[in-house]
Image (cartoon, rainbow, N blue to C red; front, side):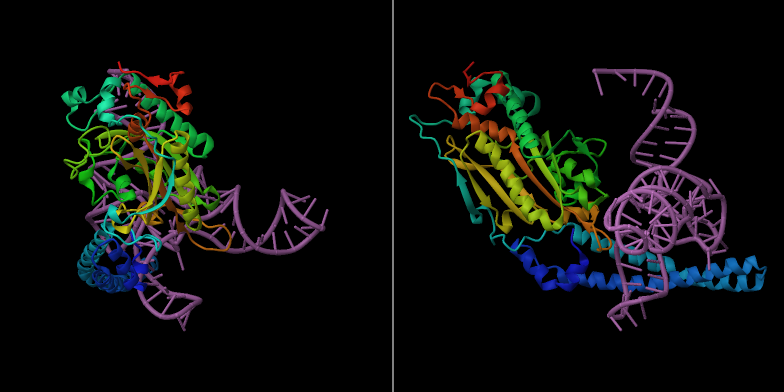
Length: 426
RNA sequence: GGACAGGUGGCAGAGUGGUCGAAUGCAGCGGUCUUGAAAACCGCCGAGGGUGCAAGCUCUCCGUGGGUUCGAAUCCCACCCUGUCCGCCA
């Protein structure tokens, strides 16, 4: 959500920033609504002021037994009131239109975000690890997986496309990955472990910017709730409507949860394998940060996500997303892309965004600055995957595959696997 | 699902039709005292908006949305949420 005051004072900068995302200029339209609304508001408020004043005088006159004055004032207020409902109605309609127009706009990209239309224009900012040299032709996980308990047919029978039924070694490996990531984020990186609701209301989804524009990407229950597409929704909304003390910041939260996405509009893409599922597990990182510290916190969060890939010894590269490829709520995003030898490419495994105050405004989440400064400020919010468990499972299987179809287990995971160091075909 | 009770400022908690945006306490901020701190004492202390260079003036907000009234935290209706008891249940 945007600050209309900022748009009023910087209409050109606002449009220029939106243009970076490929969005049309809207400042003039918004300001016309704003101006009209304020004129109405002033007129309405003058009427309200007079009404309040007269009403007080009526009370006073009645108290003094001056019925004549009271009657005269009541007649005046009655006349005033004949035109007020209409003004009220107009004002409400106009501010509603302005709010709706603001609610669908994406966040403004940060200054250091590269211009660009899509993923082709993302900028690589770092690389870690050497892709392993294979003495044989590495397979895709969807070819190796079935022998290890990755069962798409059974899932399709009961649920349809984009679901998986994990058995035996694969199920165990997924559990081990989730546990390992969660432990790493809590113990080493200082995030508080959470177990949040997976079903949330409209307001929560609106707060992170997923509603009103992206309803079709989510699943909705029969009673009107939404299945979270990411734990970002639940974790970020934990401060919704609050006024925090500055000393409470930063609040760093993490959760391992299932995520649900309808994947409307991605028909035909990544139809094979575990890459794009309706349901997947993810360890999410969220920070509620002081505005002056969010850029620094962003780097820290990227490091927290990277630490998992390094511990698992999975080669990856770090991409700074261009304006056109970022999610609507983000003002700056880094993607971590893991090396998948079976696909011979880097694939997104984590996306870490600084949303600035965009979500803070939508959620009305603020803090009280310490010291002289009066009033409140909106918090900044950040979120990132640390990591997507399903895709990590894919990365492990493809990177650690052996010629005989087995998969070795990275050393840090072995304790989580009950000592097992290799998955053998069943 | 049924029956009650309740939702008020950062927190606790008064307030049932007329200077109530709201007593009081705690927390917070500023000060006096002190070598320093504590205690004590004094003062300040909700949020958002309109208008104005500013001082200021003014509007809205007591869970949310409607309604009654000249006037609503206070009365009425609907919804949401919390608590307690009963029923059902992993």
